[in-house]
Length: 181
Image (cartoon, rainbow, N blue to C red; front, side, top):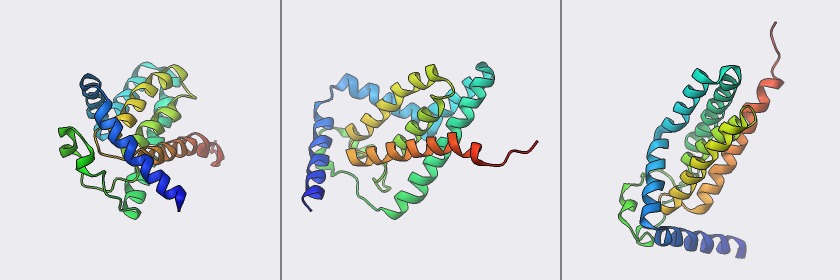
């Protein structure tokens, strides 16, 4: 019980600190990146660019990234949010107006984070430079979800784990399936 209580306390403290201490200019940048990633636009656009300009490596990275993103979205939004009905952080914890724009769905896990991490982690082995570049907005999306009051840090951590698991599946499962000649 002490562990659960400690996690709840840490969730509250980190959420309040992120909402109050991140400078306004940084918060605007975070919001802009999150808006670009909303509905997976950023990741689908990146996949399209990799497919168009990256040759075989680009197509492989894009396919892995989109497969992982799809799995992450299904697991996070289609399964976990339906099973775990967690309320969003209380509005009085958030010291800015952005809290009014958050969704009404379950807080757990962060689907935005799951998608961002899944795409990035699945892309990186096929094209490390693009994976490294994708890691920047993926990290910003994760921070923004807490800063905006949409999620607790544990929601973001769970989303990241789902994303990593989805990337692992997208990279490994095709090798396990029988190949047709």
